[in-house]
Image 1 (cartoon, rainbow, N blue to C red):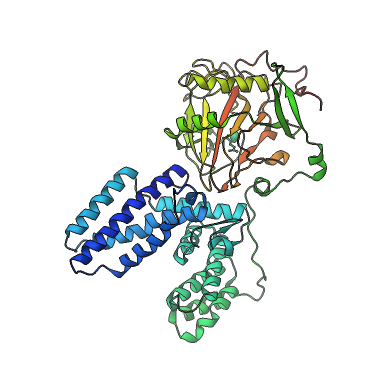
Image 2: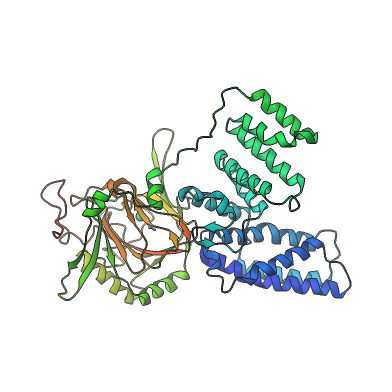
Length: 530
Ligand SMILES: O=C(O)CCC(=O)C(=O)O
Ligand SMILES: [Fe+2]
């Protein structure tokens, strides 16, 4: 899938340039033969020239959610209809068309898979998610404005309609209504010449239908009122239907449905700790066994302790990790627990799911020995062994993660409840199959995100904004070995830009004399006093 991966969007952008050049060549060759080029194709080609003019290397272009939507929409809808016209079934096959087809086949082969309606659905879903989580102003959003970042073009009416239809297809009636309403408002405020009456009527009817679906038929009638004088049969029968369903007690406002995870979303938008709690947080230099190296530690929560360590990975190491990972990124997977009809729990490993939208690549230290320096640094700072070994490893491989625009990870726990010395997951390789649970999480932040992408902990109202070169660290298990549910956390959707992190999960194996259990079951770490 394309939307979850920036590098794939980059491929699309690059390949589109070739398509565009070849379409121009096709057009001139047809015109040289004194034949007519269909008007739609001329229009598309002209508008594409204008659109692509502002794209330089493209990396900034694809950081904006609305630009990404444009790009996918062009591939799935607009280019497709160009092909349908040029390669139509009953048309004679001209030399120009053959040449153009050659390029299309080549591009198609290089892309591997042409983006499909599945990808456009993914893009629509991402726009809806960003709009909801960050409570974006919808009129601004459809005009391409996100905070201080503006898309190259506003969304077209058809694009807005595509998102509304997607909302309808996933039974998100409220969002469908809001997007149709925003579109309707836009159609009304623009001058009458740019839109045909049929478009306006179509949107008005859809909007009225969505009001009806939400239980507000009167609002539907109100929308259709201005068109009743047109004696349009469809409109009149819609109105009659809504009238027969209208009751006298219809509320003024349509309630917004509750979000699934309100605290996660609130934290994604802004800090939720009180000023009183925030005032207690501290930064300090943590001693290490090297007398002249002290780690810059920022405590963001005390119970459980969650910390950011600043400046713990160099730009060179970051580029190195990224370049290794770029060759092997694939869509991230998760473990899914399903409870069957008889209450039996089955776990599916390695499943793709919309709770985690990103690309990952595992990187082994035995393949890239220079990365052991990063493991040593983690050990220096945390006192835990982060050494990777092919058998009974102290930590997992480095997991490099890349989130594109809209990419995120909903709230989850990192612990697996695997027992030390026991194979709990049949899919695990020898390195970690008996190494126990994920005692701690260390996560490097490898770039700055323009907007969005914080790491948040809903149970303890904690928010870590992304800062390049730093790392987040926390224990998923208590000193007793019990799992700590307060460590629930997630990665917020990337709003503008992209996000690169690298996880290093530290396993129980090898930590016996590094992290002591404490004398009681509820013992806590003895952190340096501040
Ligand atoms: O990207 C983030 O901020 C969190 C990632 C995460 O929790 C994970 O990969 O397990
Ligand atoms: Fe996690």
